[in-house]
Image 1: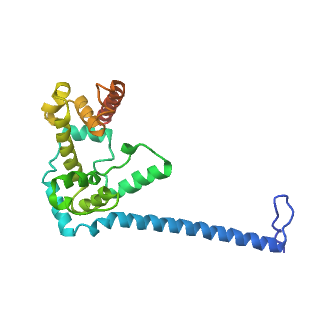
Image 2 (image 1 turned 180 degrees about the vertical axis):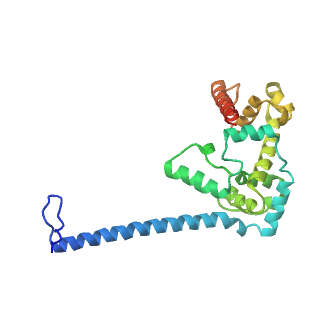
Image 3 (image 1 turned 60 degrees about the vertical axis):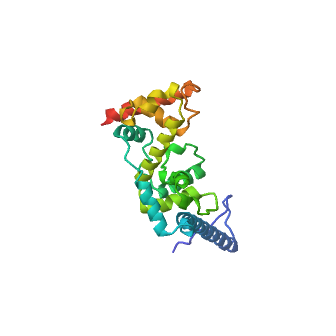
Length: 244
């Protein structure tokens, strides 16, 4: 019967029996420690997600949130087909994204990997409803809501009684109306006075860019940046059309 070879150190010399036992104990401890860390991290993430996604119930009843959702949907008319087509080409992970996807595939991913491109990740527009609706709803405005995550917390509530697409429609309709009101008619007359459905693809791209950042993508103040984004958008639309 062959004898089991003794474990050795890095130099090849056999380790004493006591040292072998101690090394195994340390290895076992490190293994259990790593498992515990993973478990605790998963627990903390799960608990944090639960608290954020349900905290709205501390301020708003289910009946109130259902009413707020109905009021939102009454002003969430569908946008023209050309707007959806251009927007989803530029940002394919926004329209149908859920709040859960936004938390884990956007915020969490960007935090872990230090990724700075917000728009390339899922973005649920339900997180934008609170700031808009609060200005127009006295009942919601009068609800004291502490903390710094009201938009996200309210977004989870409104998503429960509506949908991410309704949130997108409501937010975009409001923001387009506000943008047209703020633009200079002498410079942006066509964007202001032309219905979105009658805009060209280039004009829709410009409209979306102005909604994102009215200063950064201003064709008159930052022409180089504007032209670069416009050309990139046109290339994406062309590629998307060719792939169909």
